[in-house]
Picture 1 (cartoon, each protein chain N blue to C red):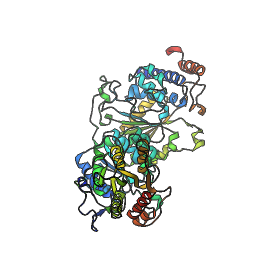
Picture 2: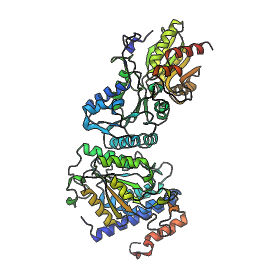
Picture 3: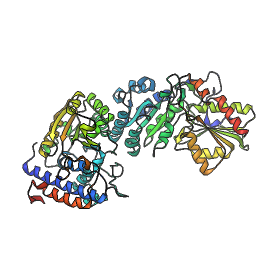
Picture 4: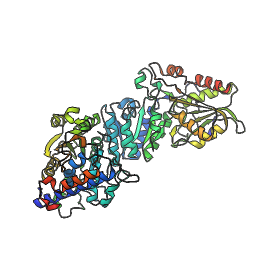
Length: 306
Length: 331
């Protein structure tokens, strides 16, 4: 079901709000990762405000979809998306990385409901997601259920694969990890069509560009060789991303990888594509400037939403 | 004298005592656990026969998951299965699980508090001919360091069976280590077993202070019991406390045994540093400082050989335990 223009604009506004919150969080925390979370804001807006079957007031709802965040260092964007969708107050985001906070520097399932896993050490999410998908298939969790959050859209609950779909968000850097490929073999073997992986292809990792550190290309071909269905999409084009996820859910015979091409630092032209922003937060002054850039979308859009 | 409440095998010191590897207890126990609870699933890393996981595979093929030689994936996929409501048992050799996948276990199972049961086979030098690469001697230490991890080294195949059944019923992650070589089945189905409880095997009459308390874990508890019998003939009075649960340690039982003895010797088929003996040393240092000797492999790797000759070489069979106890007493 394609998005209407209005729905697409709403999601873009959500992404902008998420980016602003991410910048505020990182400035308040004084440490953390900037580029990845900004690059993922559009994808997280799509997940939390359109794709996921979830209930922010009941995070343990059994029939929810699972979103496993494998690259846990990007968690500020997840916290921001969760806050904006109603899991907890947006102000709590400013406790990120502080003593006593539920918002740990890397996500811990036991501290904050709705996280699904504890992550940060790379390469472990795809296997956990595959384990979940395998278990749900064993249990026959493919019956229709009503989405409590979208009573107005009976059309998107129809179909078997809408029940407890498992999503795994990965980084490209963690494609260096052997565990990722062990999991890819496993999911391919078992044709886990209730598993959709999203790979944030932003081409940077801590020590530089991915193709310099440890070349990954041809990445799509690698997953195809592991018996996955692969789709490529612009990770900042929300309607296109949602269409890719819809297509992934229509693939019965294989797990699907959505290779989402993103720009690290997206929304802040000063830092876009600069790998040096992978692992550091903005200073207070930089934060102010970045927020301004986000609000004007780097000048590409007028101040309509600012 | 032997503790009657332990209900040990009638053949405990007989030449024809039944001998089975403790891994057989995994095979039997996990089938029992699988019958009792449909949530139990077994993952295996290309070692279905030697881990005895094949017994579960035969009875519950739809709940057996072959992972291939991929222990990191086995641990992380098990975490995901547990998150989705399963009780996964993951079986491989201890050198590889938890040896290779330690960080996966730490992050996705222990920190994430998932009820994954880690079954480490072929622990200790008694693996034999395969040599040092396959003789895990660091697992108890690695696993007991993890917050929330239960760590068990069963004394024989029968106790191993009970430990596996109990692990399935326990919340949270559990590590159990098993041996490859046949060892004496000195307990019976009547012998009490609860996670966290030590088992007194032998003690002098109530009024008498023992010269030495042998505190042992795993299958070497049988060697300790045989050593105690020989020491008794030497005129030495001995307590033998079998401590299958390394964590949480049965502190009351360990302190009670220590209180009744002049000296303590710990016995384990593991590095002498970091494992069971260290756990006992930590407790006694804090609560009851006293002379303590830790028997284990002394900062070395294993090597090829027959199980019994390796145990003798590393000073862990009954004659060497006896000799070490005598030397300690004479100090």
